[in-house]
Amino acid sequence: MAFVVPTKKGNFEVRESRSTPEGPRSRTLATFKELDDAAIKKAQAKATKPLSADALREAALRAGAPVAGTPIDGAARELLGLIANGARPDPMLKRLLLDALAKEDRSDRPTNPEAVVSDAARAAAEWIDVSPRQRGDALRDLLLLADALPVRLRSDEIGFPRLRSA
Image: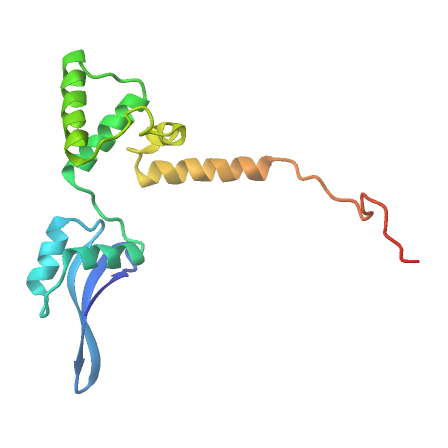
């Protein structure tokens, strides 16, 4: 049985447990900062029992480990991040991208192109290609701002009349 655990150095390990006459033991199959295909293949090669890549990704997510996306997802995130920050592709590349994506949508299922993306998703697009460090810095700034806001002290009196029974 394989599982994922964090290490003291901030990495993660894929470990496999087994029963021995001396009691349960575990051994490291792979060490990683972000679970990618190379770490999965290394763990599968060292495992004594068959190890599913999907089950390993789920175990990594449960342990809080970052899981690498596919290369096409990475390219899409990078492109969306650039567009959200004001960059624009060449008009011919834009038409080719839109055509390729439209063909993909037609092959899967009919969709309404106007209703596919919500305003919230568009607003979040500028954060799609941001590193965890930058997200953490933004969160820290937001928390510092919240700490700097004045606190309104409540008075001891209740702001509405008491109800008295007859």
